[in-house]
Image (cartoon, rainbow, N blue to C red; front, top):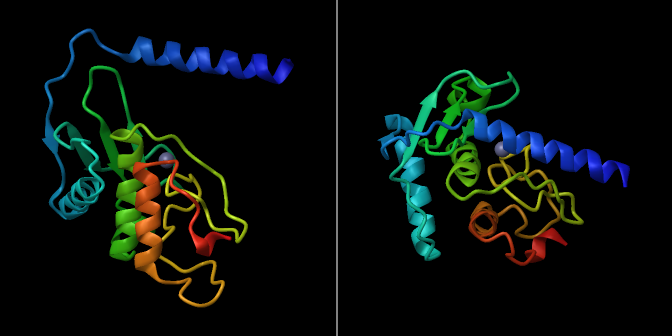
Length: 179
Ligand SMILES: [Zn+2]
């Protein structure tokens, strides 16, 4: 019983927090995205369209700035009545010196929070790979081949397709390479 009660209390506090920070005046929808991030947002639109997902990117603010903690490369701030805001760290290991795949993973992860309402998911496949791009520890799930099992396991395209399927539909079945 005890742990459950503590968890309930935490949830209540979180909800109260959300309420007190929301303002009665809703913001008008607005779109503001840095030029070097735009191609990733366009890619997100394309992937959504391919999957017949009606998600809109029309109300979204993305900025480069300081995230809550140094080891976090991005964060999504969702407040009732306000435009979803993504802050990306421009640090070299977050953005400047990483591949376009890693950048896409980061942007898609934050869009997962901010536009798809996804929460973190820490599950792993038997082979050790994360089940979801929504894991909080390593969003570069298809940017690198960290869990080679052999064969075409390191095919980035196959990986990317699966993780983006899962991003838009959390009930996507496990792929063969995860076993
Ligand atoms: Zn996250």
